[in-house]
Length: 78
View 1 (tube, rainbow, N blue to C red):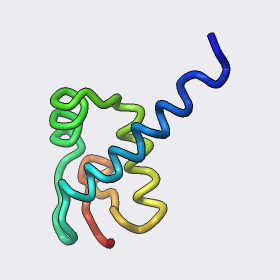
View 2 (cartoon, one colour):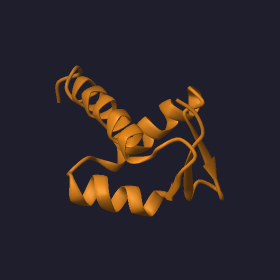
View 3 (cartoon, helix red, strand yellow):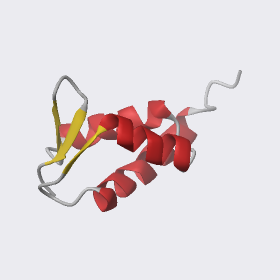
């Protein structure tokens, strides 16, 4: 296992997912985590690990808010 392998790919994937999520969720809208997993992981082939990380990053930036014990993703800001 190469030590550098995986992290750059994951970061690239997370960056792409941040853009996908912003396009997918206009400000003021919410959706379920299950729906996002189905569309982005099953539909577009992203990993769930990258999706979780992208949501965490957007949450830290106050772009999204997690509701209902993590089941609902609400787009709260830009």
